[in-house]
Structure formats: structure tokens, C-alpha cells
Image 1 (tube, rainbow, N blue to C red):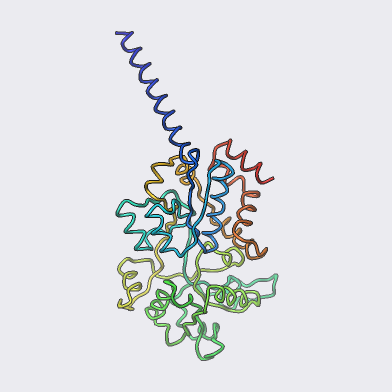
Image 2 (cartoon, rainbow, N blue to C red):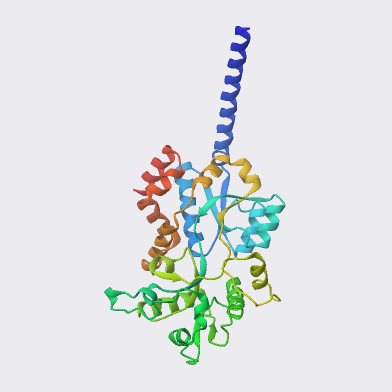
Length: 346
């Protein structure tokens, strides 16, 4: 009986060793076989930065061939579903019908958390509420905390629209952006359309410029924004409170024919690596990296501010991140990969 048990244990140990070897062989096969890992060529700042960081980690740390395909988010999400793209580095889960349908069909999966704590809402500069002694700015609205207070004439006057001085100005997203429609619905729901101009800049760059100009001059400004972004990295802002997110409320706000009887906060944001399902099965070692690769939101905002201040592209900002934030990304990779990546940066 002892010999039988011993033989069983030896067989089990052998099976486990062979199974582990097979797994390692499979894990190494995707890049070792010369296959290319194609990323979605996301064109917004945070997505472009994160894509470049992950491309560098795979090429320098794991000898992978990588590529990226440019396009808008809808096209790239569909390409991920079709396996023309393997990794969509910043997928905002639940916001896209294309992605939702592909996930339901088993064509794509979400992996890990690209970053945690992303937010969107209505903001004002911190100096407006708290003042800024270093810049000699007094707090002009020390009691401003909530969107519900904006209907007070004193605040509408504070955010005076230069073209319609009898109203305040709310800086919305550019026309055609999803957030523009939601914010317009919120202005109606909060009964602010009579006291505020719903100002839509022509481009995202124009929105940033309007915010930056007001901030650098220490002027009041009320606007919609989100993170991670360079603006969040550069400026100290205060998000105004709103009624808690409610699914029924949100459905009305996001429907073109919805009721505008009540407003509520934006839903919580879940951002993950969007991955083609076939690729996920074929490249488990890369999936393990993605599961660990969560970027601290503060560091993303700082990197995006670096891009703006230094007029650097995403690849240059990614290089700076890898050089200066080894304590962050080294936890995502093997010791061997870490050494190879660090050597490539010298």
C-alpha cells in the first residue's frame, strides 16, 4: 500500500510539473512565435500614454512585437471584437453599446483595472472656495459646495457670461460629445437654463484653453471636466456636489426624449483593459501583466500635465514615466523583464 501511495504521489507530482511546463510553454508562445500584439491607437491623452507604456513593457521586457491601429473608439472597439486589435488599453466599461454587445457575445473581456478613481462632474477652481494666499486671491465663494446653490443669483453673477452679462456661463463639452448632451440635460433638470448660458466650445482644446485662461488669471469659472487629464494634474479644483447617482434618473438624463425633472451625479467609472477573448486564451502571460498594471490616478494626471508643459508626445511621456516611476510598474512584471526594461531606458 505504501508503494502504491508513493507511486501515486510521484505520478501526481510529475503531472503537475508537466502541466506547469505546458502552461509556461503556452505562456511564452504568443510572443515567442513571432505574433504581433496590436493595440488600439487611442487618441485621447490618457489612453495614448497608457498604451505607449504597455507597448514598451511588452517590447523591452518580453521581446514582443507590437503595433497599434489608429481610429475612433467605436471603430477600435469593433476591431478588438474582431481580433484585428488585441488590447484596448482604456475601456470605460458599460459606456459603449459596441463593447457591451461584443462582451455579451463573448468576443471581448475586460481585464484588470487600468486606473481607479476616475471621475467626472462639474468643477470650480479651489481658490474660488478657499482662496490662495500665495497669489493674493480671496475666496469669492467660500460657501459654494453644491450644484443646487448655482441657482442663487449671486453665483450666476460670479460666473458672468461676457456675451450675456445678465447670466452666468457654464462651460460644457463641445457639441457632438456624449457629455455635452448629458450636461445640457442636467442644466434643464437643475432649473439653470434661465440663469446660465450653456456655452459649448468648438473643440476639446478650446475647452482646455478657456479653463486654463480663467485659472491662470484667478478668475471664477464653472465647467464640466473629468479625470485623468492634464487639467486635473495641473490645477487644484473642487467638484460640486450633486444628488447621488440613480439609475432611473440617469436613464432620463441620457435619453433624448427623457424627462428633465431631476438631476443626479454621473455613475461610478470602471476602466479596464479591453481584450479580445481569443487573445486572452492564447497569451495568459500578457493577461497576467494586465491584471497587475493599475496606474495610480495621481501619476496619470502628473504624466498628462508633463505632456502639456513639455509639449511631449505620448511616447516621450511614457518613457519619462518608466524612468521615474519604477516603484509603480516594477510590481507588474517579472524580475527579468524589469531588468531588461531598465537597461533599455539607460
